[in-house]
Image (cartoon, rainbow, N blue to C red; front, side):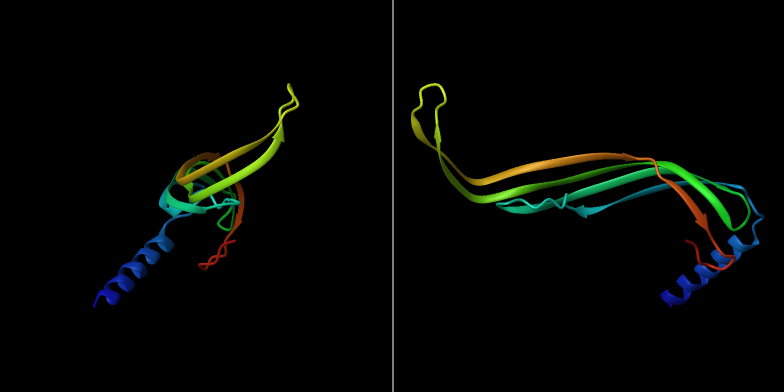
Length: 136
């Protein structure tokens, strides 16, 4: 029963869209989100996944029912991180002032670093769409 209602609503929505007059201007608003990582490849440790959000505004101008050009603005926020369970490193180096050789050692357990990226994009698109449901 649920599938029949979904198909009926989708069909009526499509029929309503086909019955509308040709309009040269189209405005859009989009939002999105989910889990993601920044896809970095740390030499040690592993990536941490965290929330991601995006929101944007768009405008499209139709030259005719098939061709249009569009632009807009989109803001995306990506969150991620790196987790090191255990890390240990020793390096032999020389003090440049005295010439003495010494070992520089670093060790850490349960190290966690959080990262965030905020991206603003301004896309420019050219679109062709047939009078059916296909668009490029």
